[in-house]
Length: 387
Ligand code: NAD
Ligand code: USQ
Image 1 (cartoon, rainbow, N blue to C red):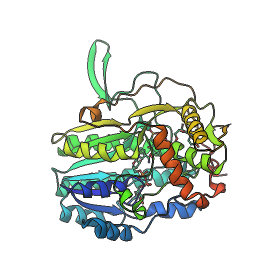
Image 2 (image 1 turned 120 degrees about the vertical axis):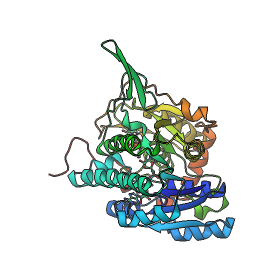
Image 3 (image 1 turned 90 degrees about the horizontal axis):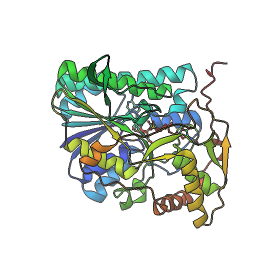
Image 4 (image 1 turned 30 degrees about the horizontal axis):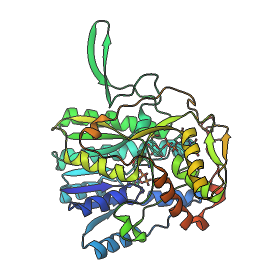
């Protein structure tokens, strides 16, 4: 299939582009390198050194003989996006190209506004380009489990059937997101559901949990193909951060009581889920939602797992319960349904000591690149950042 990967220079976009290319799809990537710019803004850097995108693509061709198209530009610029969609004629578009950090969106008013404009307007442009030029194209849009928040009932996959005053309807599942970033994903979902209804295009929201890990089958071909790996207090996600903290010997930064429970998945499963969604498209006009995670853990449990594996690797790992910089429940019910992707054949890589050990070994390889200044959380939800 002809597949465009938006955000193809990012943590998930680059491995996805390689994965789909390796499976014989004709792949094009789009990115404006804003992620690299936000690193500069924060004085941060990926732990794993990353080559410029064009060099990665050349190396991929040299090693596999497979070509990946590269388009550099902003999804918010319709004069850039429209001709790409018109000329490449994708049968599927995988949309990763957004500002994806909750803390970044909570820095101050400017970052909140930027996040919502970048994400919501960019996605709307993608929907218009599809409707105008490739109405059969399937949009596979990365959403987030964080759209739902932590309700005191089971989390269904996108929709819930409600009985109210004797009548019944199936409605979008209530959304209680926990940051301006997570809210941008909710706004995207509403827009896409509406676009499917009015234009008859088709879209899958992959409401993904927190991703961990770095190595994929494709990056094993050559270390220079490895994707970025963030550990800083703004873009680093929790398990990846804990693994870096364990290696450099700083206490694991559990926010608050650590009872926050989320869905998690291995980076290799992200790639498999995306391909499963592409190969099993919805009907024209259908908007559907898959919950994309394989296991649920509390942050405190993850810290204990890292401590345990660290011990087996000869690391002394301590745990700190920091005052929580976020506003979120630290002790709550959490049970999310994730049967759609399993039903399509997903074979999960569950979290194991072996996986944790293998990431620890990769982190150890680059441990001289860790900047201790970046480890502590730097953004407080309770402050507007304007003072
Ligand atoms: P990332 O920041 O590493 O990659 C996103 C890429 O999109 C970057 O390369 C960035 O330069 C590009 N981009 C952003 N705005 C753009 C624009 N306007 N025009 C063109 N390119 C743009 O993020 P990631 O971790 O790879 O996440 C990818 C997607 O998956 C995001 O939408 C995120 O919300 C979602 N997601 C990620 C995780 C996770 O744990 N990493 C979990 C759930 C959902
Ligand atoms: N946390 C800690 N210590 C840390 C970092 C985080 O206790 O050092 C806690 C947070 O308070 C939160 C949980 O761990 O309760 C998850 O935080 P995170 O930074 O790993 O993940 P989050 O902010 O939710 O965002 C990440 C991705 C985002 C994606 C989301 C999926 O950056 O793009 O949408 O995971 S989900 O969590 O399901 O919404």
